[in-house]
Length: 129
Image (cartoon, rainbow, N blue to C red; front, side, top):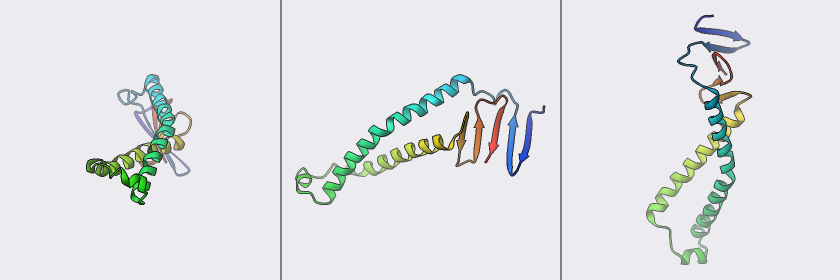
């Protein structure tokens, strides 16, 4: 077998790389990736609760609730930083969920790149989707 092999099957290209320096994804790395995904999924409910509670306080203040208005506005740096933090948090969790739901048995699928890496394949297999 050559170091690189390209096969085509009904519009799907499968590129197989048999080059040991590239095949550095061990079972330990796969286990770490799975653990990271599990931790991310566990963190979704508390992060959603925190975003919901702060969003409620934000809405109550800016819609003119007397109780929230009496406490005064948040500090200016917090008002400027909050939208960036909220959008970044949503983006990180949304892309994580998309990566998880788009993947299939034994692979990591990147819809942005249109590439799936077979982690359990030896040699490393890259599928263009």
